Image (cartoon, rainbow, N blue to C red; front, side, top):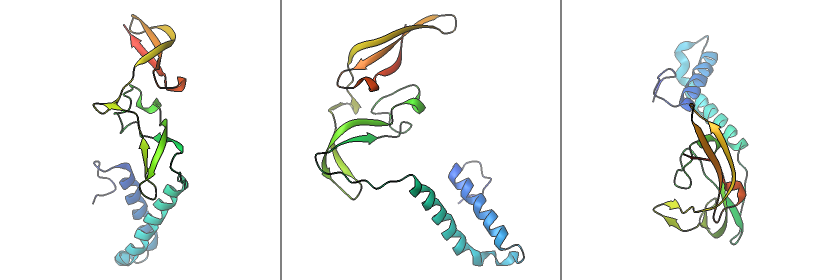
Length: 162
């Protein structure tokens, strides 16, 4: 429960509240005391509109046991896979991992690599590139590290060495 202008709500609630306010103003312009009668239609309209927006980004996919798939993680919520300084630019897809079983209609059990304390073990295999950069009147060396058991695309973009 919040108002459209309450600062401690998330953006989605603020947008929905503003849309509902606009909808109710349009429908009750001549009879403002009858706004309660429009609430069921307004609720259906907000939910249907949100569902349509969410469904535009979804696609139905089914995988069979034994297929190799990529795992999509939200970088701002998952820091157990890799901890990078630039979360917006971090990798979104990890893998491929083999599907072991279908758990639900959209859920699958994957064969994940062994972990240590909840983190994937990452051992450097090679340094692919080096460069020097000046930061606050100090020369720093940045390296591109290829990790063991990972491809070149998963190499750390820049690792600061002082």
